[in-house]
Length: 458
Image 1 (cartoon, one colour):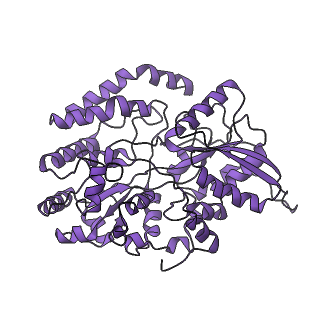
Image 2 (cartoon, one colour):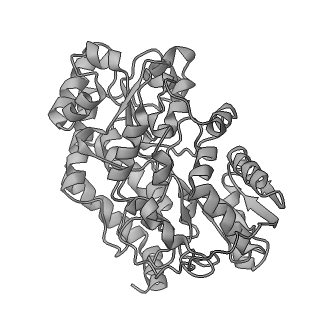
Image 3 (spheres, helix red, strand yellow):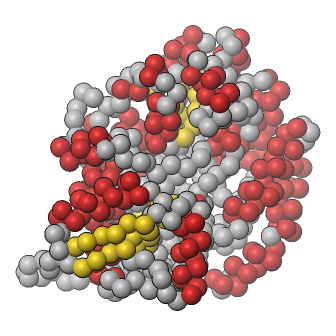
């Protein structure tokens, strides 16, 4: 790197901290259910200034996490700062954590002091039952609102928009990672800023795709990738339960996916998690992928020869979307809420805590963490591109994220993904296909939707 982070961050980079990662749009399946819409925050209570010395923290915390390595780094640094604090970390497992936490909340006992919740798990708890509202006394999270983007702040509210039940954390923007050598060989602009401007025009994207195909290179992972780019920031319903995926933008996206299929511009396998796709991507047969900054680790795993071959830029078609993210919550059953909040606030809403966590390739949601050395970091994978400035600007452009309705994943798994693929295979009219999908979603999940409406008073 041309510039180095301070010693603390350098140490954490050596620890190879596990990044918070979610599957991206390449498969057309979203794995995080973040919140959208404008939340109505309850008035935040902020303690008046005092000249009294800060109270020394002491006590014990139980933390549940799906990322024990990353959580341990945070816990160790917090305990080093607070010698009278002890922290025990438990990793129940990716699927087990939300199930266990929901069970303990329902049972009225057994919950930890803090739970580290990945975005796709958050929908299990978005009703707000059993979790502390961090906008109400004794907490004062409201003072941090300006330190996060509006969409990231809204994302972790309860379904009724009144409670902040998760402290905002990372907000990875979806990014175009591309091979400049392949783009240049196909006659396209290889400079990140020039390519971003070029790809705002869909005609240019398809022109580039056909030139790449002539060179034996795929533009996209999957036929449905254009739809995945639009769904990255758009869930199924907004907070007023208006259906969101049947409009002119999605008609355009569906038509572009049909064009990708007809022209054969996609390799139709995953670049990082499928052996055939990894072989294609590592051998220079795939020009672009669209994921959060965390995917740099996945690109590196394609082989050491990938270093320096990639660059990052904005999404095609002028889009912006999130791709991943997590939060920390404080269960109401916790035995040491004051200490739990002190840890959560330090880890997620302080420069020091974010420096401990971000490591290599992180994209913190806490805006002050982007200043100084971290904003100037360059990446060997990206040919020493100072991509953090790009990531920061793309994160700030994200205006919406999914409302964490409990039925989101079921809609994706049981209706949306299958019906989109079926409609593409049949070359259906875009408007007809989207209308059919909307009707099936609303019919199949009417009971679930009505239940949530009643729960939030809609």
